[in-house]
Length: 87
Image (cartoon, rainbow, N blue to C red):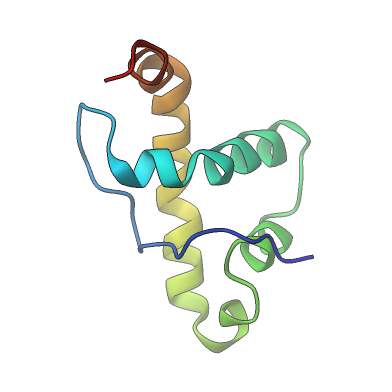
């Protein structure tokens, strides 16, 4: 399974504010949080996020996977409030 997601950067932009990238990748963040809570396999998650690119550039695929969960967790603590307030 490959998800239909907007293109991923190697890492989400670092900001204490909600970014356009956060808004575009809300589904990505939810997927990662759900995947992690369900005990899903890391390699399978990478394939779902980056599709066939994971086999072509494993280092980049791992970098993408490693960088995005932290931002997803930030969204659960802070970002969602900004999203709901319309910021």
